[in-house]
Length: 232
Image 1: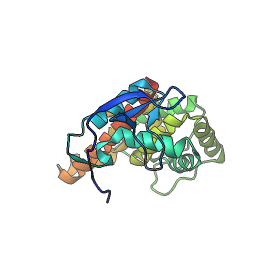
Image 2: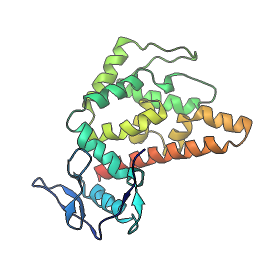
Image 3: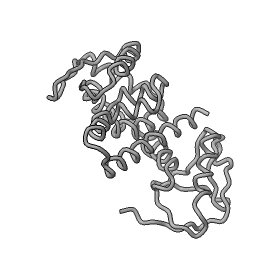
């Protein structure tokens, strides 16, 4: 369990950090240090100011955890995990990519939406096999290589974004289509949790399941916001 910390700063500002034109959050004039010692600083002014707002919203004297600093947490992963060595993140995403939930067709899924994503994926050179069975699907080597090539070409910000989205959605193709604007946020999260929504429809409201879905959707939205701010 992560120990809560108490707000110790009086003023939050955003300004230049380092010599490469990056901007970072300054607490009483001092830059924020991430767990491994790196400075919280980015090249996107839009993200830098959003990070500053995140630290400012912690009430004076209040206790906080990383869960209260969502953008900081994602940005920290980008800075300290992906920029130095993206290999581990690519490996995790590759695992989901070759065993993509989207490829296991079910009656709960929106078939037209799946077809739209697959059509777009094919335009990117991604042609996965599909199945209606529940047994693990072994993708062809050509698809595995295409997934590797796709991941290798991704910019670090996209890898950080997918690093949050992909494990939640159990898919590489679906969140990638969401980031690229092929599907809307509402369509994407509903498709990602199609079986759970079918369960709720069939058996009625499940307060705990609904809470879990709400939390997952919030995490996906936070990751998408991080990516959009990085582009701004």
